[in-house]
Every structure is written in structure tokens, then in C-alpha cells.
Amino acid sequence: MNTSILVIYTGGTIGMKQNVKTGALAPFDFSGIEREVPELKKIKYKLDTHSFKNPIDSSDVDPSFWANIATIIKNNYDLYDGFVILHGTDTMSYSASALSFMLENLNKPVIFTGAQLPIDSVRADGRENILAAIEIAASQQNGKPTVPEVCIFFENKLFRGNRTTKHSAEDFNAFRSYNYPVLAESGVEIKYNLPAIAKPKSNKVLKIYTEMDTSVTGLKIFPGINCDFIDNILNIKGLKGIVIETFGSGNTPTSEKFLAKFKEATDKGLIVLNITQCQVGHVEMEHYEAGILFKKTGVVCGKDMTFEAAITKLSFLLANNKSVTVIKEKLQKSLRGEIS
Ligand code: ASP
Image (cartoon, rainbow, N blue to C red; front, top):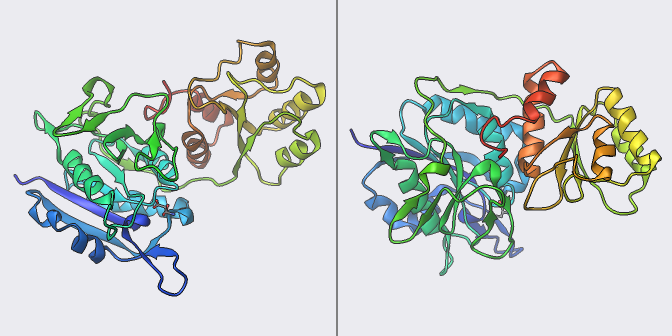
């Protein structure tokens, strides 16, 4: 049977054109991409496209956009062997993280890609990105998809989506996965790092979740942070969860005032998820006195989750679980390979 791939075009620089009046880049429709990448016609797989009616700059991504992608995948799941999502780079790591949680029992490749330059530029990086992403989405080993997970392909590397961060606003090599190995590298051939790739989940049916709870926020700790401001943030009306980016292996200031604010908040039921500001490594609150004191306030250890994975996981769990205890347990467990 012929391999079939669905390309979902959502917007981003890859399909943008310069507005003649302002000179700024704005999203354009998919026909422009097809014109600029004639190689798409030569691809031996059955290739269909689903183009968003109003392609967006990914700065406008929100949970309803993720729910839309999850629903398109669900509705087309039996018709295609893999999915390629063309998306802006700015929030691609958030979308790949969110989708990894929203698609349960995923057994087919969902490969996000995009570009740093519009596809009609002379040195466009998007051509190679789309073509390689399609090849990866179509790849099979012993009749099973090689990469049955949500990934990002960029420049020449394939990453687990919920491990990535946009690291450069100017390099073609825009993404990094600091705490998990690269899943594949493309050169003359695409070389897969099979031990690092998720195994297919036999016979399980894809289940999608379309709800995310946005009663969450993030806070980066810095020396001299004002405890009264923290107090205001922790007491925002309706706030259910907060991701705190702490120093090193999960340390914070140790003043009584600082710690008391967090103790009060967790006692009232707020979920405080501790991740590190460092790009490499994980939270281990037992390492320093400062970490032990923060742990005693009732915060949850986010281990080596990226901010993108932590905030989308928190939203996802809050929307789909009633018990705070269960949410706290799940935050510390790897649900989709987001924690080492
Ligand atoms: N602002 C663009 C976006 O994220 C940047 C890009 O696509 O690279 O949609």
C-alpha cells in the first residue's frame, strides 16, 4: 500500500510574505509553499494538505489552536501514516509539548517543522526542513512507524518535541534538546537513534484531549525578588498552578518571608512546580539546604522538564483531573517522555 502523509499548514515564517506597505512579514497561504518547493510533486508518497483558513504567526497560538490540530489528527488518523505540521518557530516547542500530552497512545509520527526564512527567499531553510520531515513521517521499520511520537525536525536534527526549546532567533539550527538525545540526524541518509525513540504502543487506540486549563502562570526567581510581588502573584484570583524557575538544582532564597509565601500558597491548594533556570540538568531539592527549605513549603519537583513542557503539562493535567494529589503525582512522572 502507498504511504500517505498529511501536511497541516498552520502559518509561521515558512509561508510568510513581506507586506509591501509595512515591510513586515505576515502569513500567506499554502499555495506559495507548493510553488516554491516543486520537489513536493516528486515525492513518491501520497501527500495531502490541510491548510488553516487563517494561517497565523505562532505568537498567536493558544489552547484552542492545539485542540484544532489534535482534532484534525484524530479525524484523519486512520487515513494517513504520518503527519507533518508546518508551524512558526517562536512557539513550536510549546505546541509540540502540548500536543504530546493531548495525543494519548500516539502510534504514528507527528513531525513539527518550519523555517527561519520565508520559503521564497533565495537561501530558504524551509525546503529541506519540509522534505526531510515528510521523509521521517513516512519512515517505517518492519511495517511500523520509525518515530511514533510528537517531534520537531529542524535544520538537520529530529528532536522529541517536549524536550525542545527555541534556542536561537537567528541560526538555522534554532532548536535544542538539552536533556535528551537527538532522535535522528539527516545527512546523505537519515540516521535514526533507535534506542532513544519511543516504542509503538501495541493495539492502543488514539485518545485525544482537547481541554487545557489556563489558570496557570510562570515565575522566574532572581536575586532580590520582591516578596510582596510574589505574594500578589501567588494570590491571583483563580490561579491553580504556577511553574517556578529556580536556581541550579532547584534552590531559592531562604528568607522566612519568601518561604512563608509559598507555604501559605501550597496549603491553600496552589500547585507550585519547581523547574530549574539552567538549560542542562534537573531539580534535586535535597542537594542544598536552600533546596530542602523550599521543598518543605510543599512544592512539586519538576525534575528536568523544560518550561514549555512544564507549563503545558500543568494546564493539561488541571483540565483533565479533579484531584490535586493525582495531579502532583503525575507532574513528577514521565507521561510522554518529557522527564528523564
Ligand atoms: N514569528 C514567526 C512565528 O513563530 C517566527 C517563525 O516562524 O520562525 O510564527
